[in-house]
Image 1: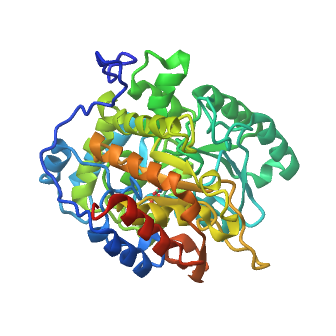
Image 2: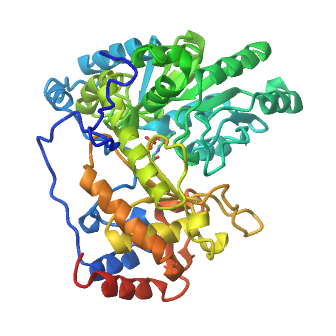
Length: 487
Ligand code: F0G
């Protein structure tokens, strides 16, 4: 059964509540520690949520990467893993699943998404190249630039608006694309990159209509299209919900339509199939041969690519499950619930709800904190202190420092609260919303952050920061006043 609203359950009361179409069979105990412990933990972690120990975290909303719940069938499949260096049957089962779902015959396994970016960038990008895309992802940009490329984000005017009702904020602006190709010359454009459920602008999808227009331009110039399919399942789900032509199509058919429009597909299976790994897929033997030799060099032999065979088995099953409406709709359903509730409370949040997580606009939330004091990072730290919920900064800390010593200020300052598939319950979601609401009412207490240790590359992962004043202590004092000894 895959009618348009097969996963939407109506309540007699009229309430709009996402209902879990699965049951919990294995659980992990969580710790909700006292606020003093949480303050110590974030100080120890250099005010960077990446540097927290999950022992101190209540709801881990850092990412959906490698943290989606796995199914009984995925776990069962791991028992039939074939431990072979070369020619493992596990690989052939995964290859078959990828061929079925993405419609590409030639598969290169890699250990995770950025490894695919490394191989694609090394193979196709040369100094002076420009790569048009709807929006960058952090690791994508880093790999492309290391190889001498420059990225150009040619999103539409709607893409960066926080409040919007546009269904496809991940679309490419076709005019900008044409102009870019004319300006730099077709010989300097190795490919056009499309990222499904565009991560850094709030998990926003693109439409197939837009993909087809991009394809037309690509064909006119003989440029190939590369699809980052890490969040393709959710993008397909939004297409089914929001693009009329596909209202009655299956997720499987939508996925195939998307994949058929691109020469190369790569993905992080940490997201797309709820496992840990990645891959590159194509039907073009020439492209495949150009990339192939880098796999044994950087990843591992061609039938495991740095992945465990157990994960490879689970990936085959997980990929099939991604085509199931009840699986793929779950995370967007919870995100939509959270976004709508936050919006009702007047908390600035990206609309419409996208994939991956709810995205709070820290620039508005903390409009008294200058962007060079990292409002999104400060909000992530503050939320952790008052709730134990760990989100991720997606703003200027996730950007770079320029040669002149200044920060490249990010287009958006977002606190991303990830909803990995089938992990959190409704009461946990309500707890998050409640604590965010309290924080919003007390936002004046939150101050900025500054770097005390700053790595040169991908600084957001390991960088350490400090509060610019004693605002964390003041926040804790107010929390204790309002909540007493309560957690
Ligand atoms: N592309 C996209 C769109 C991603 O979201 C990610 C990872 C990657 C590539 C890299 O894949 O982590 O397997 O190497 N996103 C994670 C996140 C890290 O938290 O959003 P990877």
